[in-house]
Image (cartoon, rainbow, N blue to C red; front, side, top):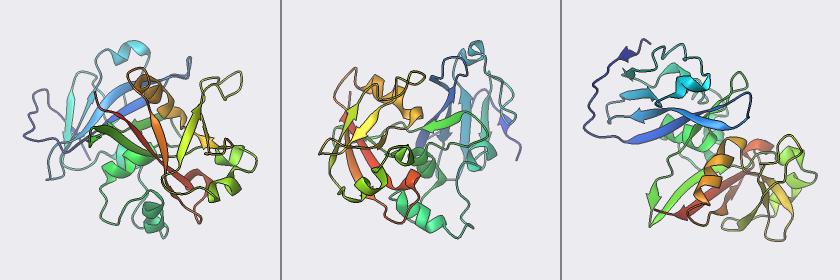
Length: 235
């Protein structure tokens, strides 16, 4: 696929927008480096870097070599598509179920719920948290369950709708920003994913953020065992 650099793209409608974030190696903070937008129902997408991102030391991505361009393609760019499990994988439909999604789900929704992380780089994808009934709402799988003694067993006892408390500063000296999630009885069951911590922190500056259990996936690996729902009042 060859993306076309178009400085004057005009979209009649925008179905979905996600933000690409990058973990800076020096600070380990995630900064927004660009936006991926689903332009219409014809399968067109655009990617555009955030203004000034080159000043933070980011090397332009191979698929998007110019910081000043808007890239438009007729399909999801490979940089993002490679962050979605292939539908040919035997576990694909189980994977969708663990994310609370159906077989007809678009890749953009999968990226929004998983963060689109890969072991080979420091990029993730952030949802824009669409407004539903006066609240911004989003979903994410709790991270770090395998690192907490007994968490895999405790997660089994959770039920959809249970509220999970956020415990700040639960990391070690190198990662004091980590946000622990605790069950209604006060025991730890996982973490807010690292790539989402700064976003949650920003949300809490303008209103309360509540985390609920969306579903527990008994047959899933630990990193997908607990699907959470985030809610905060809309601006």
